[in-house]
Each structure stands twice: as C-alpha cells, then as structure tokens.
Image (cartoon, rainbow, N blue to C red):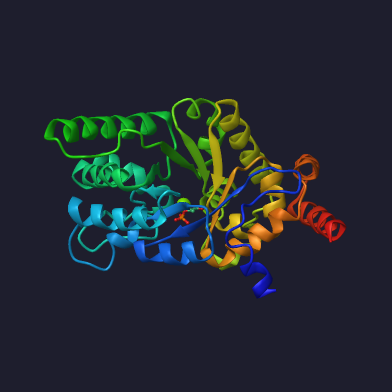
Length: 325
Ligand code: PEP
Ligand code: MG
C-alpha cells in the first residue's frame, strides 16, 4: 500500500468525473515545507506562524519573519503558500507579551482581535508577508475573524503597509490574495457578505466545532459533544462553501477534519475546493479523492444535510464507503 501511494506523489487530485481538489499541507515552520514537497502536496494551505514567536524572549522583527516566510515560499514555488497571521491568545501565550488573565481565554483577546490592537506586532508581520510575495505564490490569511469590520480594518492596515513599502522602494508583491479563516459561527453566517471582500475562505473546523457546540476542544469530559459531523457544523460548512462560490472565490478546510478519511467525501460533496492537512495524510487523501465521483458526493452531502444527528451522518458515510469499495 505504501509503494502504491508513493506512485501518486506527482499525480493531480482529481475525482473520477474530473473535479479538481487541491490537497495541501499544514506547516508550522519553513523546514516543514520539505515534508510537504516530499509527498507532493499541491501547496501549503495553512502556515501557522506562531512558532516564530514562541520559545523566545522577544518579538521577532520584520527581517527575521521575512526570511522565514521567504524560505517556505521559495521552497514551495510556484505552488501557493497561505500564511496565517499571528493566532496567539486562547491557549497560546508569549512570555514577552503579558496579557490580563481572562475568564474565558478562547472567547477572549486573541488572534486578529489582539493584532488589530497591537500594530507594533501586526504591521511588521504584514510587511514581511508582502515582501515574501516577491519570491513565490503567497496568500495572506487572518485567523478568528468574527465581523466584517475586523476584515476591513486588517485590509486597511495591509493597504497602508503597501503604500509605505512603495514609498520606501522596498520590493513586495501587490497581488497577494487576502482571505480569512472561518472558525466562528458568526463568520459562516455572514459568509455571503464576507465573500464580497475576502479573496478566499479556509474553514478552521477545530475551532468552528468548538464554538458551534460550545464545547471546549481540550476538555475530555465533554468530548462526546465535540462533533465534527453535527448537522449544525455541516450546515455552516455548506453555507460558507456556497457563499464563496457565488462570489467566485475558493474555499478550503484546514482543520483536522480535512485529513480525516471519513470526512473527506462529505467535504468534497459540500463543494470544498481545497483540503489542507498534515503532510502524512496527503497521499491517502489523494488516493481517496481519485476513487470517488463528485456527482455522487454531491448527493451524499445533500442527504447528510437532511439528517438529525452525528450518529446518523456517520452511518450514512459508512454505508456510502462500503458501496464505493
Ligand atoms: C482550526 O481552528 O481549525 C485551525 C486550523 O486553527 P488552529 O488549529 O491553529 O486553531
Ligand atoms: Mg483555529
């Protein structure tokens, strides 16, 4: 099976009836790009940049960030690299960035909320990403966007930094798509509006599930409620995908669900264009996609959306898997 999968490294990820699914990898450091290339990932769908900020005593400056992004981008070029801006807060804190204690850190001052208030932190990262755009196919993505205003404010900062770079004569790419993660129910619910101003969506199912079911993703006591296949989660994914496509934008999934063989047929059937996962799952996912018919998966997704519970959805997926084999 291993050698059979290895033969897929250089193949495109097409369903039997010809629908193209981008199978990309998630990385946490520039060096991880090598593992993504080794398995033939079609891009980096999520570059978590927190690593650059952690395990150190001061903020990384623009130059250091630029070098890290450039390394990843050059290695992957011409394939796309989606660089996510800092997603700190929640469970992740930095020693040199003191934060007030919060009653509910996952509902608190984190990610884009923090970045918008800390231009000293956010602007150097934006500049580093814009500059790395000169070396390949870069996308910029904001985490934990909950409102249109946040997207607009972040994009305004991007425009301001572009203007500064231009004035300074510093090379950068002016054509970097700017998208958002969909990981809060409010975001999925206004995806039709956000799709007019975001260049793409990537659904962060890890957080989307946690916020939809009000279920802490780390709390073992309530793990039975952490339901990736809950009909509410599926509806939010569907709304997001449909909203993106109506504006001719692409939509990916970069949470754990994207690499789950049970979830992949359903996600493809819901219209997801890109799946970003750990490099170790890429070939299995490609093999799976190549064995499926998109038309049948559309029907599967339609049927799943009619069901009442996660258990019913899982039974449907299991029946459909047996029919394919
Ligand atoms: C997610 O929430 O699904 C996601 C990909 O982001 P993270 O796991 O880094 O919160
Ligand atoms: Mg998240």
